[in-house]
Length: 167
Image (cartoon, rainbow, N blue to C red; front, side, top):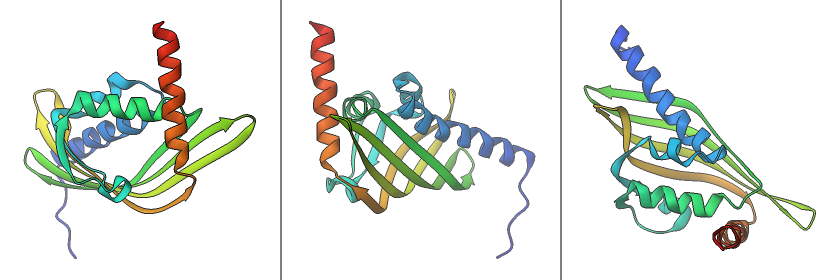
């Protein structure tokens, strides 16, 4: 398949989109929730059905970020790696597919516990006055290993820490 030679503008757009999507991973792993929130439009369509079984649904980005924060902040460490991005530009819109690996580490009474996921994200991006943003994100899980129960344990740990900090 012959590809059209990208213009300089195409290359700039691709670099800007990649930077935004790296903020997805960096925001989560560094617990920089403002950085993570900044990649989304105010309302975002989310489809994590291959992970959760719940159907795709639009929601306020603030609510999505709060849910991710409350689920992942209780882990001792996470590492989200995004790679092999394919960016299809169409004016002020773009579709992006990129592979992902996500590792979630939790120390429970000295035992090292890990849950890992592999697959890919598909983002529907839009150029706004604030730059490129994700208006839709779909996770397709290809494989996973480890104990999913770690997510509930981490969320409970975070809730307990938050309750203690708020007291």
